[in-house]
Image (cartoon, rainbow, N blue to C red):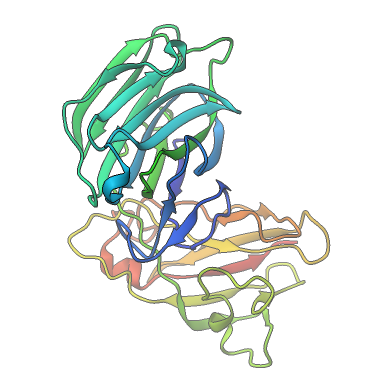
Length: 339
């Protein structure tokens, strides 16, 4: 385990998250969408995602606060918190006047360290956080890749030595956009330190390469048209199968990125078991010139409320070298029934 969470909200839904925010397709850092956390009293509007229980992570969040006009003094802003269930272990605030400010719940709401860079409205920033829990812990922050502020001290309130969810919310009259989230732990040979600058771009099916699954319409040759909606239209259009190891393969639109290094490729889907929870599904990929690569079997629920992910491919399995943009444009992918 190394990369714990990668989220760009390209599926334009909140599967895998809780909260009361909205998808926005007009203001985004990359790709097709971001999340708008609307203004309100402290903690009124937020996004929250669970992660495996850990004591140390590196996290990246793209943030943008639009200008609220006369209704803000600049000390309102956006908070990024690391929590053990509902107990906050440590957190930072991104303020329009105060800049980056580090807090620890051991000291209440009084900040323990602050950066020197003032932030601007209507500007995307990459905020990276390294947090380690302990009586001699650390919270340090980078802003757009540059060290901004750090603090060492007691980051272990009470008996909590780990945290298991990321909470992002706003305070006061400032809205907040978030995008391009990543979280690494410290294990493994890669993705075990600072996430670095990164953009998450989704692309969706545009052709049916091969088909064994049954579509919700009468035409079996256009299955890609039944799985290309964003967000998912649930049971309006779909493909399904009841025989083990039936699959579809789809071609995808070009990713439309330039001058970038591709660090990972994965497939994401929304699926459910139509009989009872527990049916298995795998997502497969096929790079040009190579064989099909199957991700692990994923146990389904009987609702579309579980994020279905393939294994991440950090390199092209055919060349065993970093992905080229042209190679990602030629990827085929699709679902395979497993039980």
